[in-house]
Length: 121
Image (cartoon, rainbow, N blue to C red; front, side, top):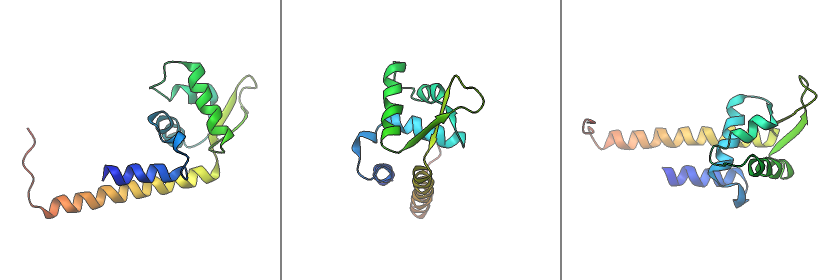
């Protein structure tokens, strides 16, 4: 199950393996959960595995350059910028999560068919 979900995550990026990392997982799922634009500085903080704000900023810029994120002026604060998933990436992530839920359901059915599970300690 985890292998199939992992391969589905790679397909989200259409073979661009540089985005197949936990840092991009944190960034993109964080923005996806937000349901709309987030301040660029908040987006960099979503990558919990990166200690450097400068490195996180480079990741965000790479995602913008590859059309994964779009950037615009913050309508609420002219001193900051916001980023959001591009419509195409939002569609791909929605599809990914639908597939991941399907994998969980299939795995659950397989486990149920094997009989009762031992009680957890």
